[in-house]
Structure formats: C-alpha cells, structure tokens
Image (tube, rainbow, N blue to C red; front, side):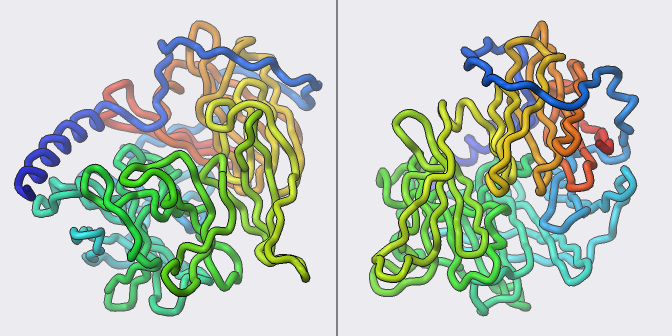
Length: 439
C-alpha cells in the first residue's frame, strides 16, 4: 500500500511541477469573462487622480530574477528557487541590496507518520531572526505522503511557550510558493540544537483523504503570530467540520486547556475569512451572516458576572467577502467600488476609479501595515491589466494600464509608501523583474 501511494504521489508531483513552471500566483487571466458587478456605492472621491507612463514613477530592478517576498523583519526580503536556493535582500532608498545569510542548517519536522527535512537559510539582524527553506519530493524522494513544504523560522512570540528559542512553521500548499499570504498548517517550537516539538496537541488530528494529516486542524498566518503579551495564543481551525475533508467553516481556537479537549477551546465560530486582529484584550474578526457578513469585536475575558464574552457588532457589509472583497492587513477593499475600510481605525476611504473602465474590479490588493497606502490590480478597458496606487492620507491616486501588469507574481507596500511589484517576463514565468517606487 505504501509503495502504491508513493508511486501515485510521485506522478502527481511531476505534474504539479510542470504546471507550476508556467503558472505564477497572482497572474490574471485577462481573457476570462467578467463576473456581474455590484452597483457602486455612492459618495464623492477626494484627492487627485493621475495617469501616465509607469516608468515616470517606477525604477526597474532586473538584478533579482525571482519574485521578491516579505519576511517578518521590516526591510528584509527573500527569494527562493524551486531547488531551495535562498537569497536575502535589504530594501533601502528604492533599491534592493543582497545580504549574506547568517547561518544555514538542516532541520526535520514530524508531520503525522512522515518526517519532513529542509535546509534553513537564516538572517539575524538587530536581535530579529528570519529563516526559510524548502522541502519537495524531488529534493527528498524518500518521503511518501508529502510533495511540498515551505519552512519558515521566526523569533519566538509571547504566548507560544518557553520550550523553544524559535518558531518553525510549514505551509504544505505549493500554489502559495510565490505568495506573501502563506497559511501554515504545521507549527513547532525549536531549541538551540534545532530539535522541533509540536506547539499544539496532535492527539485528535485526523488524516485527510490523501492519508496525510488534515491541514485545517490548525492554521497560522504571519499576521496573527504577534499577539502581544497574551498568555494563550489564538489560532484558526476547521477541525470540527467534515471528517477527513477540509471545510470552509472556520473557528478561532485558544491554545492551552486541559483534559481530553486540550488545545481545542473554542473562542469564536463562523468566521468569514482567515483573518483576525488582536488588540489588547479585544479580538476583531469577520463573521458570516445570511445576508452578508459583519465585523465583530470579542473580548478575551467575560465581563464580571457573565459566563462568557459576547460579540459586539462593529459594522455589517453586503455581499460575500470571498467574492466581492479583498483583505490585506487591516484593510478591506470592495473590489468594484474602490471603498477601503480599516478594521482597526473604523475609517473608510474611497479610491477614485474614474480613470478606469466603468466595470473595473480589482483581483489583487495589498495595503501597507498602517493602511495609509495601497496598490490594487484589475482588468481595464479591452481587458488590459491596470494597477491603481493610492495614498489614502492625501487621497492621491495613480493609475497605469499595461499588459505587463497581468503578470504580477507578488507585490508589497511599506508604511513609508514604498511599493515593490514582482513581475514575470510573460506567460512562461521563467524569469522575473522588480518595479520599485515611492508613493
């Protein structure tokens, strides 16, 4: 049976690699039929709108031939190829400068009945640590049930315990290889000798239909790692839904607890997305509703005399979050209207779409951590790709239309308004170049 699984998975992985060579996360199909658009929300856009030649704003950096991806350290970026080779870069004055790695070593992590190995390449700056590595079935053919794993190493965050010096996380979905929005289904504490221990109990974890461990048992993103000085860590899970299959129903669970349900303490149920924001004793998240969804706030401690905390509605939204909106950081974009809502400030800004097609709708969106700057991408007139760069402080909007923006692999915006776009050289995605600008 094990040999049969190994043969089948090996064949599937060859197909996966072949497809991945010509597909880039974020590359839009500009020939795809447009979906029905929602009626734009009323309201006047403020600020200045500017269109023109993108080269007037962007400087082109062709020295880095792979997509440039974020780390958990400000101004530090990395690239990784399919063989696991890693390079680190510092972003300064609209330029990327390569940095030497601090260390590299091999780690192993248990995933169900398998052990996944990877070589971690690591940089340490100002007492902050970031490392990454790659497992594939081509690099390590002795592994049967898994064909891919992106490894990430970070500083230890409060609430994760004192058993380790670092956190190690693994994302096993290869379609996020070139994405800044990875979802880690495996998380470990790691000591100075690089020995790893599961952060959460695995006692009730089930296998999926492919005989590997369900990836929605626990889910972390980089956005939810730093939860302040909380004693217990909140994390995402779909473990209570649909045995042996992943589910679209998501809950927030709390680490800790005791007895049979250790690490299974529910905090909030019925989330509409893989996002939540922890601010002091309050947690904000999107909750599903029959006629849309809403933003709610839930305190981590019940009021005196109450058995449990009750969610407080902050704002309700029409439409479906997954179809009509995009989330980045603390910002929620309504794709076809340009309305940007900041979860943490409860403020709404309007991006001016007037220079674009009447039915313009964004398909990519990224906001700076503060929410002051954002970039989005969609199909303009004649389905030619366009990008929109917005300074939400001043209201100034820049729009650029060019086929090349249809091949964006990933993008990032910093709190100082610096924008990095990583683009593929055409559909083959065999090489990449970077556009860097300051808003």
